[in-house]
Length: 248
Length: 181
Image (cartoon, rainbow over all chains, first blue to last red; front, side, top):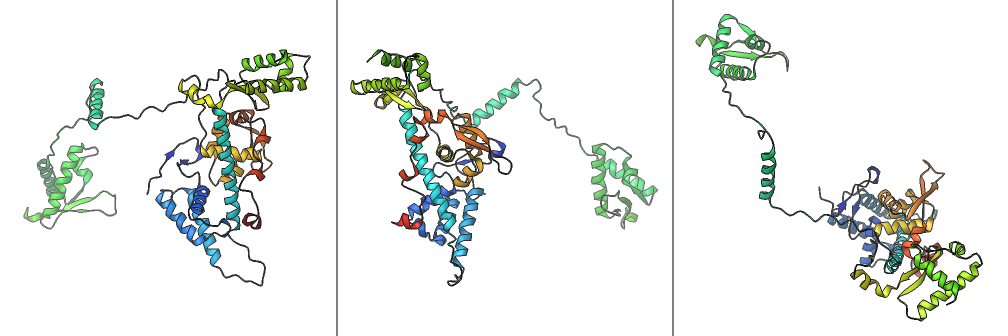
């Protein structure tokens, strides 16, 4: 993932992801500037070359995830492929696959020229003031905050100090009693050949009892004094005497 | 300057916006449009020829007294007035398309620009530079936009006819032969 440069302004849900770049107003703009830079005749665009350039450019600009630029890249590659198809001269006249792209580029270029004209006109008007014209003050964005990590931490501490109960989480040591659990298991094993987890702990054991018993069971199983069996995953397991039980 | 020209000057000085001929008519029932046009001409020449710091501009179908461009910087530096915020390149592109194709829908704008333009359209609408004038007959009956009088004021244009004609642009939509020649 590469970051998209520029700013993303969520104007509305249907406005989509708006990428405003200082240099390019869209894929057509980027394409036009490439054509200009390469001093290419717009009526005879070397599509293979310009498609490669376009891909390089959107990658360099981090735009290779912007749908509109990707769409243009796909269009260029399709035209490049169409240009490679053999032409059958004697049949119907060959239609240049670049035609539609050229038409769009010229149309867009015309719009750009008008946009520049509008910009010049608006600057001309803006430089002449009407009497008592008070334009609304532009909303200056708040200055960027400058702080160090220490200042942030100090601020966090000040906020925490103001809280009535600064204790966020209490950790209480509760030692597991594996020894007692082992004794209880061995006692049950002596009485019965097999029993269940529930027989060992009852219907609602405390977390400490459950963990203590689990550790004890695993240890005894390791020693071979008992075995743990389950008929299917997630079913209660059955505890019975293991191969080493007699020696215990 | 005759009496009517001085009345015109006073009216333009007092009004907060460009005044059209039919608004000037209210000032003096005796005067015809031709009389007012003569007065406008006289005031213009007076300002131009006698070294005034203001001029009469034809804007949005009316007349307005504006300071001369030469003094913009000094006035702005002194903070007596400020230039409005300039529009972004994207906003100007959308305005250009709508100005020439109005009424135009969002799909048309996006087709020409090759990028989604809903946000820019909304911004221009909020600024009062374009407005919804109806709906297209097409699928989903999309909204159609046109420029407003404020658009003309923003650009300092008298009317839409002041926009450059397509044959005045250096890039015309011409077939290859014409462009090559």
